[in-house]
Amino acid sequence: MMPTLFQKIIAREIPADIVYEDEATLAFRDVQPQAPTHILVIPKKPLTRLSDAGADDAELLGRLLQTVNRVAASEGLADFRVVVNNGAGAGQSVFHLHLHLLGGRPFRWPPG
Ligand code: DGP
Image 1 (cartoon, rainbow, N blue to C red):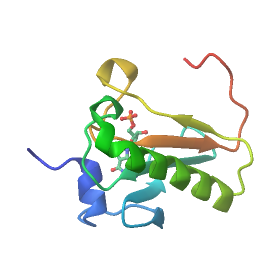
Image 2: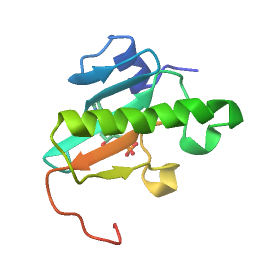
Image 3: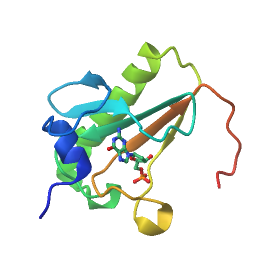
């Protein structure tokens, strides 16, 4: 399978504004920000989407949320929104699991 855009960012084959990295996760700014702070948190493991995560990914899923918390704190965000688009019908356009961390403006509910 062709590597996705995000696998190329992990491999430093295309540039990104990386704000955090550890052995399992990477966080970088979204190129089309939907809020003053819009950061994507991804696993280095190439999971296509959230619903492809299995029981053996439980620790990884926890680590992704820990990275969200860490990055939100480093960005000075007390309140923030986390979004996962799972599948094309839900708005997913890059098929490597990613969590959108959005902050810096008020958010309405329900989302569009
Ligand atoms: P989604 O629609 O949930 O699959 O979100 C994909 C996000 O990825 C979207 O908000 C735009 C962002 N994006 C697309 N291409 C690039 C890129 O080359 N670099 C960065 N940093 N973000 C990208």
